[in-house]
Figure 1 (cartoon, rainbow, N blue to C red):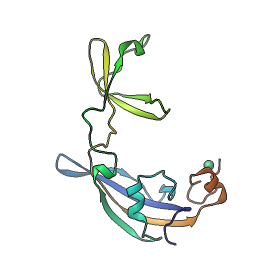
Figure 2 (cartoon, rainbow, N blue to C red):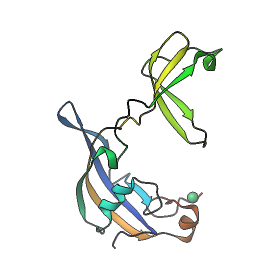
Figure 3 (spheres, protein in one colour):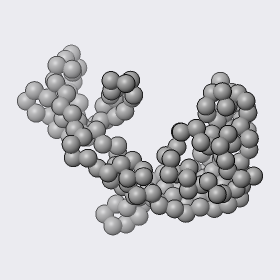
Length: 165
Ligand SMILES: [Zn+2]
């Protein structure tokens, strides 16, 4: 079956990124635990879905997403100064640790602590994969029409559609 919107896709993929001039495997899914998602529902990177748009069950893929089409270019300005009062009554976070944060729209994201100065904790708000080209290879294991329940929820309910909630 061909991949198209309102279908649930199960696939395996390997994700490689360039680190210090060599390509390293940073994520991997298996046939036992494939990535299963509702195609066209906005859960995946748009250009990731675009690269799958011509594929069908049994096809393989191998494509690269430049940083701009993945998690964005690294932005030197994307840092926040969190006043130390925010951490009153608790230990200050360690450099390198990830803090759960929330923006004005209620979106959750993580910031990585880069330094602690006199009155503030400085946090890098870039996505951990910002500035990196993503190289995906993999196999399309299955494509099936989404169930009415999945369409109303806007997400897939597992490879067979029976893990409802
Ligand atoms: Zn659901």
